[in-house]
Length: 201
Image (cartoon, rainbow, N blue to C red; front, side):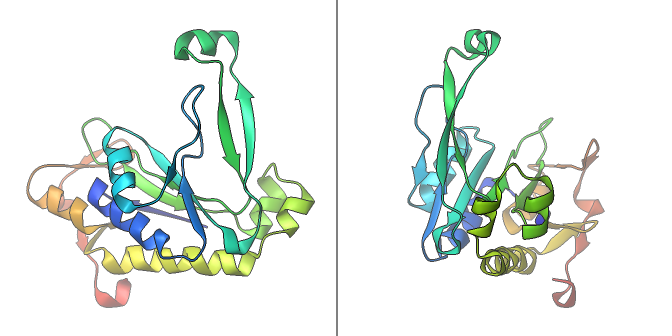
């Protein structure tokens, strides 16, 4: 399951607030900085500060759906160690992770964000997870959680660019002349937006 949308940091903070409403949710850095532990977030304000420092993603695991969260230590190549100044990083893994890609600045524009999670079929066909890990996930419950968040994004978005929702803070920045959208290689201004009718949300 995946949804592409446009969001400013305030929108992504509100998205994290919506995710925090899910019982048993854990929100964290999927990939740690070199030689540092992964950050776990307790509040939307922590997410906002994290994104404002240039972070490009965060992840969530609704523990009630199963799919145990595990840690894997990745050792960098010699070249990467030299470039990064670190020896490796920790990756948090689960087939039930919900990923939010949130690189808000590309070429001085608001870049498309996305929310993604595996479906059972996709995990079996294309993921690295074994049968035991996949069988441990309540896929219907995970799908319901992510579908609810996607509906919330669409419902809260006053406009869209083609089929992609544009969330409120992103719309405000665009209409006030403080931002343009990065439409997969093209810079786009407010004239390109379509209003999201209640029926189309």
